[in-house]
Image (cartoon, rainbow, N blue to C red; front, top):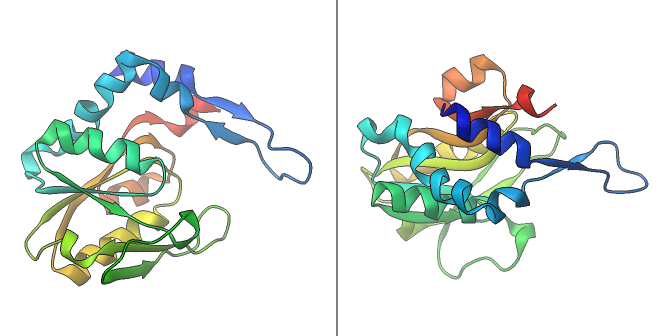
Length: 182
């Protein structure tokens, strides 16, 4: 975990009150995208722990994953496959492979879909996301990989905020520990 980058990532997170009726603060990570040095270093830093596993493709869930996934894929010199959520806009045309996550930190189950032609049997998949709190979406994406005959090699995240046992089980590596953002 590059400590200088980790520190800068933590500095750039802002906590916001979404307003009346909200039960918790929400994170604003837009500072990551505004800082050119952070933006340039994110992709290479995310993929470094997984280079030896030789991923052939990066998969990331909507919405922030659509920013991070291509940065990681470019750093590896591989392609990118977006994982769509029905509530985030229009789904792509064509056959999709679906999975539903176990309950996340809010108790929600998230449906995720990947275009069937996006993952091939034998692909070595690196999952990339901005924040992993429970591993619920990671599990759903690993399920999609299994259904397509692809092998997940692990998950790279900016913020690692899940229990250590979950991180070990799902092979999740992060750039900054969630405790550093409290």
